[in-house]
Length: 418
Image (tube, rainbow, N blue to C red; front, top):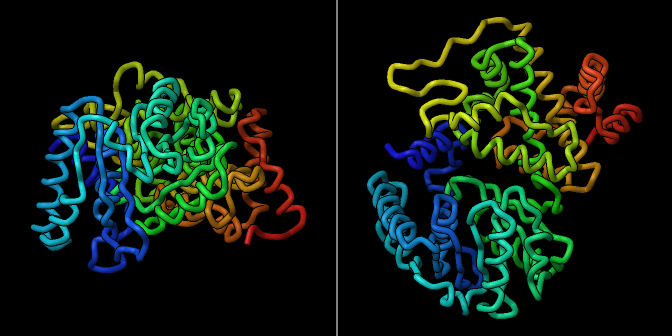
């Protein structure tokens, strides 16, 4: 089984809640809206997945990649995926044939000239993305929306090279795009309201759960989720618990995957790069500081499942170690990590990154947390979360553990987020 297929099935099995009906949920009833011609740039796992989503919803979708082999691979992958869905009874052959008929694999971006929306899903490199947007803007009509699927770069920075930056917007799908329900819509400083409104209408018509986010490092999910990985690594570095025990502690409290097995699935190259990007874009705020442990794994090319080794070994004959059974320790681990996550969610709300509803929706739909973090805080009690953070701040004397102003206000005024 290829790495792409392994990740696809593992994410589906571990992170995605079962569909509410027998209908495979990324094939919703087509909304009664005008069908657009969609352009997708980048035929890797993400780009081909995005193209599949739009095609499945009746949009004529053009897929381009600078590497013709990637386009051929995506075409073959789409055909195989449709065949398997038909074989398993997830969709009918008619639906599969219609989806494939809406996909067009092009050799030149010049064919995007009649597109109403073009989305790029290429390498996370600002210079390369800026050049691409500058080139694409010269091809498409003035009313074409230009979307970036960036997960950590500034939408405003990408748009800055365009003559019409007001039509550039972040449209961040999660991998694999056909399965993951969340899409973050990110409005840059120069993005106008009509661009945001139309983009949300398009994404919502796909049957996706869209959330609106401010153009800040990591947006909602990749910002708030940093402590799930970083604090878990810190706990291990301190010798408090091993990887398996930390993973088990979080899974015992409803998380589908522990932080270390999830990092190994995502890839430590990807996870570390996102962490380092968010940290540097926040002007090296200690709250987002990367760990040397993950940096060393990154340097050793121990990326996780796809390389055979990460925090765990996936080489033939290897087994995941058994966790230590200690309920008191598990509760301490859980509360420490959860308190850091809730603090990030509270700070994101305080700084206007997104609404409380969108923050909670993003974390349940984007990374499948068992509960929305702000609602979870209300259930546990903000005073308990604040006390945990105060203890950590006192114990370590690090800015990493500073509590959000909003969390302190909530506790002081004896109120809740909801």
